[in-house]
Length: 128
Length: 128
Image (cartoon, rainbow over all chains, first blue to last red; front, side, top):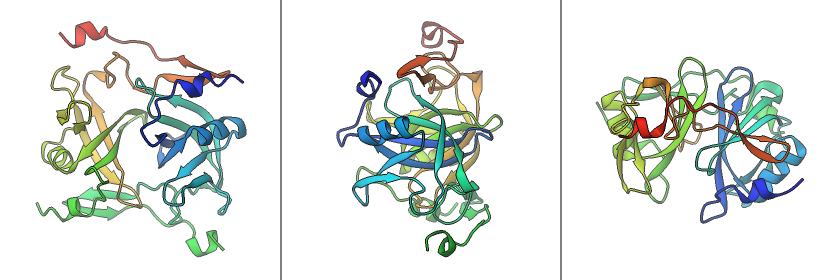
């Protein structure tokens, strides 16, 4: 496969782009992470989400520890070619390291962030 | 309203957080932008999306030129408190400056980014 599509992505000064993972069926936004060129290339090759962990400074094949892989249904980029949207199937139904379906479980209500999503599995059971 | 919820957001070294705007009804991801503290505060106060334009280095009340305001239905943050998800109602049905519904109109197909969403309105008509 030609890598022209990778060249067309506008990587930031750190060589990264934001990546949004969305449930392909329900449309739910599940998580947000970052990708470098290698992560995006591997994502396309594998058909599973691979991110760049800024804290660990290494490639992060989502699910490698938890088993909660993200199968890529579709890859999109935006009008500026500087953000990636992944439409995915979330293996195990849990995207968040807290054991929730989505990372976006804090809702602003009356001036407070309120946790509105249930923990589906104890993180201790996920990361043994 | 107390500003504790604003203090709980983890702003990056430039005082910004990524912000994802999603159609509250359809779940479609419409655009991606950035917010500083003032932008997020104004978003909550106004009930309309206000971003920080990194290129223009100023607050950007989405729709101020196009009329395509974004009415906020719900604000969320993620497990790390460092990303904002806005569930919105898109006034005019067009979020993208190209005249498309969503900014994420480029789909990866056979190793090429392909424009798969129609232009609903000529940008020249939007930005007079």
